Image (cartoon, rainbow, N blue to C red; front, top):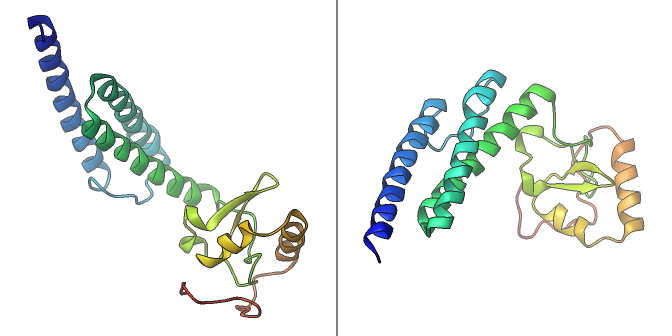
Length: 173
């Protein structure tokens, strides 16, 4: 490595360290360094999104410089910021899905319990499921079966939990 390359590497490391500290302070200023609680729209616009952009920029630079671990840490911050953003938008604008009942079981959807792995996009609409087993079963249905299940779930109000034809092995409610 030439003297110029060594200086450049040291400069990149110094900048990366500074960015890491700044991003740590940014994350801690919201709700703590690992918090994904919703924030106000003003906080989202003023801190969360700009912080995510900075972390993403730092990650790109770190990747180019070969600093994989630092880049992964920055990408983790971006993922946390996106989770905060999604939760804030859910609070501000309502549920992130169109159905009130599970297409597979007919049970009510509890908005606060729906995680991204319990949501599928169908005909351009986000639909939610009640438990871990349902999205997997949905994925195995034919187009016609999905259409029927979706139409049925959209036509019924939130009802009691329907266990008929549903295997509860491997998941809990």
